[in-house]
Length: 203
Picture 1: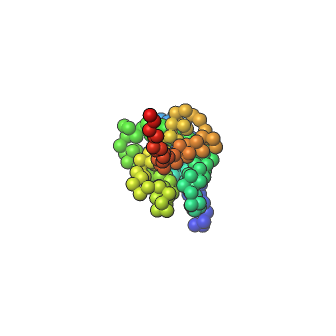
Picture 2: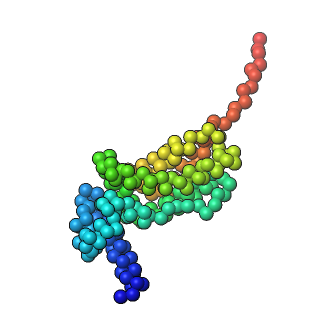
Picture 3: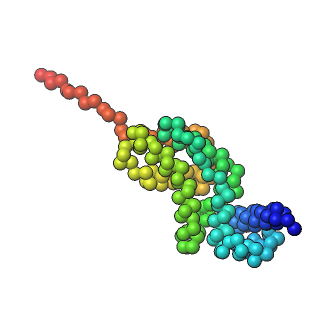
């Protein structure tokens, strides 16, 4: 058997294992996921699975890494425009992804599973990186104040999106995206300056 054929079979087996993991997560959640079930669904041996992934948590991590990452090609020079485009990309990615139903389960599992929680920290950091970069560029060009709390802003954005998608089970449509970005920009820029007119004395 040639090396090319061996690599092709190995890639096909890996894809089958990851697909089986995703299906089982979607059907029964994290607690129902076992290496035995993955092996049976993927028609692969447990030895093959453990050779690539040390634990069930590592297998879940590999599945999450299949989700494309929204990434603007370059900054437009306007944070408002950049945020709208980034959120549009994310909305398109998640629209038909089976991970949309899986992610809330994994987040809930992290509360009682330190091993899974530990592995998901860098995953979340990679998801925040493009957004963090856009905000930092806005600060550099003077669009936002230098004292802007970047990490708090990312928390607010992620929280709003999570509530919309995972609790309200609603889509990130264009109207919502633009509304969120406008609200964020108004808050970041602060209240408009008002002119205080001197009152004329009467009498």
